[in-house]
Amino acid sequence: MSYRQMDKFNLLSKWKSLLFLLGLFQSLHAQSILQYRPVLLIVQHKESNRPEELAIRSFWRDTHQMYLIVQPDSLYTHEDLATDYTSKPTDWNYLRMHWSSKPYIKALSESLQNDSRLQNAGLIHLRDPEPGISLTIDLCPSKLSLDKRVFNALCQSITPYCLTVPVALSISGQWLLSHKDDLSWLKSLAVQKELNIIWINHTMHHHWNPNLPLYENFLLEQGTDLITEVLGNEELLLEHGLLPSCFFRFPGLVSDKSIIEQIANWGLISIGSDAWLSKGQKPKDSGSIVLVHANGHDLIGINAFLRLLQNEKEKLKSGQWRLIDLREEIQKE
Image 1 (cartoon, rainbow, N blue to C red):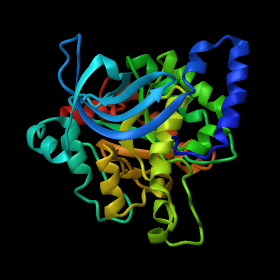
Image 2: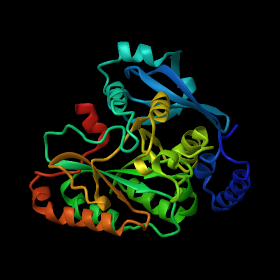
Image 3: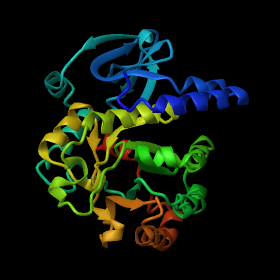
Image 4: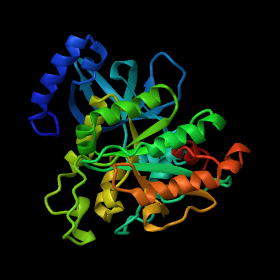
């Protein structure tokens, strides 16, 4: 049973017809996600020597049961056939006790250390001794087109000096559904390896009421269905060929203790920011998690980031400044 409303199936049928006419069988195959649910299983591949991993979701894609799996040492995720793995149920108490040295478990625990904050809970800074930032770009619901300037600047300014250009995109379901062409363009940058995109869950609807205080707003608004907002958005990402990461960003960076604990219980590491550029916050010399919006509503933040790129141009050329991959930096920590 899907977490989202039944009208998606009408849209799904239209897409299937179009994809059939275009002969895109693989894309058609990617549309059918059923019985999406959280699990917590220690899994091991039957035919490889890979170390144990953690399955955090189970679902069916057409007639195949699949797992969404986190590699606890690298924090990378992958989707794989459940039948290719042996599995055993576990719980967070066991993992905190026996996997305490794993970067994934450490990061989950650290993301809860400031869980009582109303705004900007979770990881807000990386302990990186080398100069550089981790760039996170939010795609909140918007009627405006994608602001491509930031992505073009990344490709033009950083690609010549780096093998990969890591960028974390916090994507909301409502943005995805109303910006199919923009999404295809972003996916093409990933396929062409111009950008190394980490897809972060930013909820399905990203509810926001300008008339409500923060403590009653965003995910804290009365009547919010957290399952739909979080798990339903992951399901949507998978349906559109995007691999959900093990990270989560709260809309407005607003949360409370109970919600952030539930997010962690679903195996997601909450990511805040210590450099929300449109609010005038400045990145620190190393390890800052920078936040901008590319949904057309953040001219201040995007312009500030473009100036930052220009200012760091010479350091970038000499390798004295870089963009940081969230996963790899947490792994080193």
